[in-house]
Image 1 (cartoon, each protein chain N blue to C red):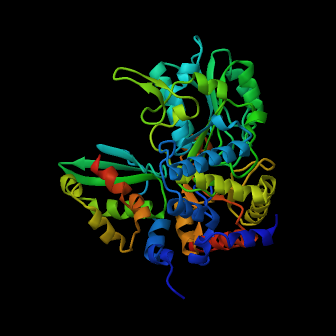
Image 2: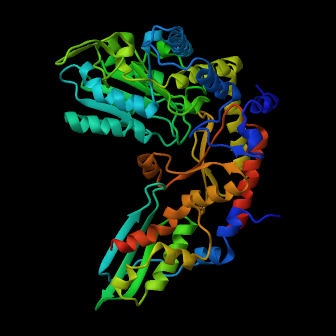
Image 3: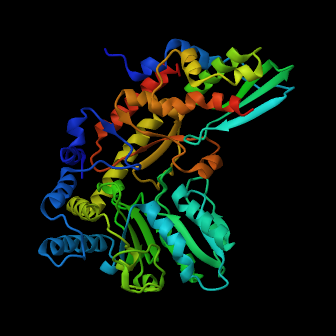
Length: 404
Length: 122
């Protein structure tokens, strides 16, 4: 992939036609949607809208077929089995649902949860709440000064008491690609359940759950070209079989009497009530779009944009970049000396440049770094060198305004 | 060239006050103090008061914040110095916006109101 390809891809995204000169650099918050994905939603509602797994009529059968085909596409994308894909609302929803029932998988004597110092609040608070409920202990893998995880520290924290290890694949604030393979290995040796928060990696790099050998993995559709309100919880089949459902209602039952109920097979036993059918189909469409470009190409392109931006940022005086020299993704955090991130973002907004400013749902990490927040930019496949250039020009304007 | 949004809010009088805010620092003798945090960005503003016979004799603010929260703190503390504390607490959002003399959009409103929230809770 190169700059010309990125420019061509941009044409697939109607928002860039409707909002001229938009420089969208907040892809870690949500990505823009290509017309292929938007059209798939329209097409579903206009041509085969019906509830799934209910009707015996062809329309419902067709909707069911599309919904299950979407599940298959997603399973293939992460190298999972079809029945290991549970549709949820989002990464947050996946992690919260898991935290509600995961204790049904934990053997006696295990009472510790290991996380890292850099988790997004959504991979922190559900576990805090579980720990409070069960009177378990929380432990945190330290971050090195170079923004990577301290694996020696991980080895010393994980023990046969560890019930759960939950780690983000890519840090949403720093862009570090964490050594999850190592952490999963350490956790497995101690019989802990391993969970990966893939919110920032899915759709940005290839993710193979069989290869990783993680037990669970969560991600959101809207951060990878798909609409809001659709997410996925992957779980190993054998664990999903044993795990208690986290929601109850229509569709997920085997049989029901007034006093009791039994559950149907996986993954449907975790999908109570009517699901976001159009969302699931649109997510599969997003995956088809990504597959056409190729995940390796996308990963490389994002890195190339970051590399370019880092080089340019370093040429500006008074900029502190919070990223590892070698290990980085399409997400970059930085600060301009003496200028608050909010002020930077407000002024960049004048030049139609969208960046994130603040703590990025990562308050403990910001505290550790001794700052209240950062300016964060995050690239995706449709971003170009020109976008990065405009950012650099914008930053120069910010500095001018502050007389720095 | 059209006036940009930041030209509207980062006006000269605002930037001047930002560079040399009034009442910034730490008070030695205090009777009241409160630190308010903006949950959306983690900024903190502390307001310290020396109140005698119900009147604010001295006031300082400290903390980290963006231009808007620091300027708003400077303007607010300046306005309420020597005021009766009970009257000072009656200051409203509208009063703050009038002091600022710039148009604030919704995403920055919390920044501007941070010192007012701190004052109300001292």
